[in-house]
Amino acid sequence: MVGWRVRRPGPIETKPLDLVREVIPGPGADELLVRVLACGVCRTDLHVAEGDLAVHRAGVVPGHEVVGEVVALGTQVDERRHRAAFAVGDRVGIAWLRRTCGECTYCLRGAENLCPRSVYTGWDADGGYAEFATVPADYALHLPDNYSVSETAPLLCAGIIGYRALERAALPKGGRLGIYGFGGSGHIAAQVAAARGAEVHVMTRDPAARELATELGAASVQESTQPPPAQLDSAILFAPVGTLVPTALAALGRGGVLAIAGIQLSAIPELDYQRHLFQEREIRSVTANTRADATEFLAFAAAHRIRVTATDYPLDTADRALADLAGGRFTGTAVLVP
Image (cartoon, rainbow, N blue to C red; front, side):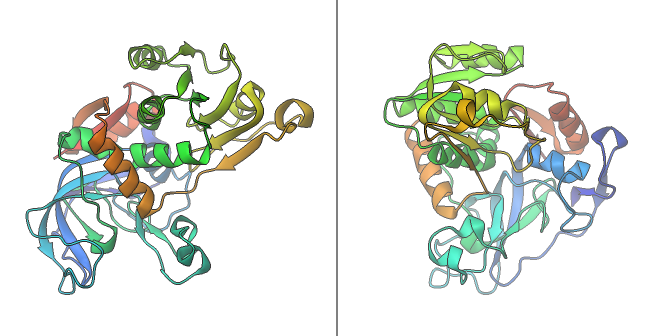
């Protein structure tokens, strides 16, 4: 098979990924072998390639927004042992969360995304920037059938993490939500919030993203550093820009919550207690997702047709897709198609 490996983590212009030809992996006893039909390109992949995230597996294959077809089952995969039955030929999703211990305090209380022994697709184990991938059957996802493979791939991280960020933001019913950064996650989360009756305000520096936000019905659209026209009840920061934290906090009304959705963030400036935090304003981080988040969001996506803005790239141009992501040269998300 053909795939990409991160051989020399560093700036994307230094070409840290190598295109390789390798033997197709076999599934572990509790795993599925999947032929990759599409893989979304996430900013986390860029952090892995550029070394912003510590190396967990040398030479890893990135990619954790994988839509594929099951081609083989591990010897222990069956309906009795696993949370959902899979068969050869089924369409399946592979997301960021790959495995947890199932035994720690966090796993037992339903917060498996905080498991200290959790491992992740495209970081700890090979992901979807390849023609084939494996996934533990207990962590594979059944997918909605009313989306193309290119539309489905971004749902598996951009969509799921946007959904969790929206939950963490504790938006009251009918409230005002501010979204800072309007890429893959932002444009999906905005539609989920709007479908729930929220008033959505978008702050982004990208003119094309502002145009997309307007098309999707945002109540207001402005530059990322400009205030929205009304106080916000909640806000989500998708852009990995720490200087926007005080900006977003200043836009919140009393009791407002800011959820920071990125796995990596630049330095946060000094905050002023009275202006940014008093009156019970909160900052919450977002760490990965649980399988329950994924199941809930994918069910929502099946019931509410979400517009997914995606640009297809051939698999052998994954390095260019990451460079275009770093340079902001597409709106929405990129998807690799073998």
